[in-house]
Length: 245
Picture 1 (cartoon, helix red, strand yellow):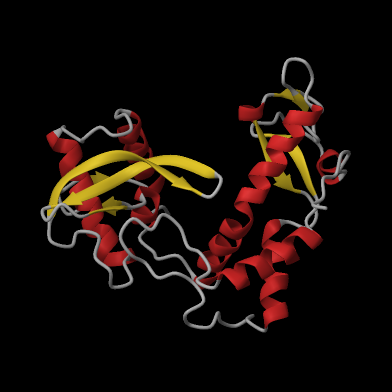
Picture 2: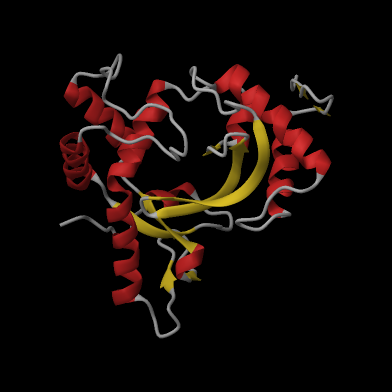
């Protein structure tokens, strides 16, 4: 049975899905750089941030000195960008927070943090690989065939996907290679702090080591972000495999 989500301001959602939908729609009502002006939105976000500090935070408080206001900002990482909520505190410091993670009410596991660091180590190369395919192999309309369905897709409609093995398998193989199946050594990953959008390797040499390992194993392909139903045989057959040189 789905568990309800109760926030400290009295807002109750029947399910986590309903809570995430509420905050997703709230985020969509604002533009990047815009302050949250609606009193009820501010109240819901304040209560959600309390939930984050209580259930998700590893000791680093997002509320800190107190809440002054909320904003929508564009978060940018290595090869990606997405909009999200930020809190500005009464001392004018600010930091991001994840509303889905706050709703879920659990910190990321060590495995999730390590996988994020691995992805950040290769994300720029993945973006360059996708761009290269469209620069050199798209048709006159800028379209490329989805490797699964064969349907033509534009750059914004496509994603570069790990075919064989999946990215998670590559990450697990690297952990095994390092002897870190049970635990990642302390000091390997960046710790939580203000405005840290994602987790990275502290040692650039380790990030490069994973990048080299990933590039030696990864078989990639261009697929559509949204796909009609397809057979498993279609999905398992890689028609145009892409590899790093």
